[in-house]
Length: 259
Image (tube, helix red, strand yellow):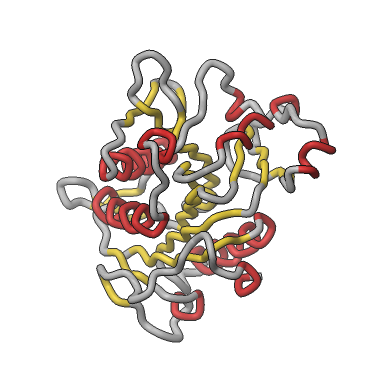
């Protein structure tokens, strides 16, 4: 079973602290698998393989645009998180996930990333956006023959079989923020969003619901919507397969509640 919690807007430092707390609890088997869905206030993150030169904006310009800068232990290079983008942090124990034929197995890092890509490919398809993978590149890309564009980035960390960090799907993201960096160190392909592809903005909660459903399908797991972190830690009970009666508006919730 995967418990899904929507957190609203969370600054990156708080997101890191929350992930570490949940990773520790998952390693101690005090909680089950958890998927956090949230937005970050504007931030550029540098993964373990990042080159500082891929942040091309000056410190002054970053300050003018209200963008923080963080180094982190996920895989990958440089990326941007911000409003209008759904960030997902799966805190999963990779031992014992189901295979298509019903057996249980330990997922390797590559298979885990491929499954994350599949979740995002299916989610984009739910909104009539055709996407695919590109050999040797991690993430999800539009199918335009002339210029494939990256719509979702993936970068994970795995320790003692427990995952952290995850993916970022550009929904209504202001794509001009990506001009501050060389996204993932790739100069030959642009970045896009669901809004850009469809020509209109989308309801973030509808996209979050699609992501959650597709996690259930791809990981062969039941989905448990959980209203709060307190509920996640066992003080109340969520409702299987149904979202909360009033889904959090990812773009409106007070981040201070999660500090």
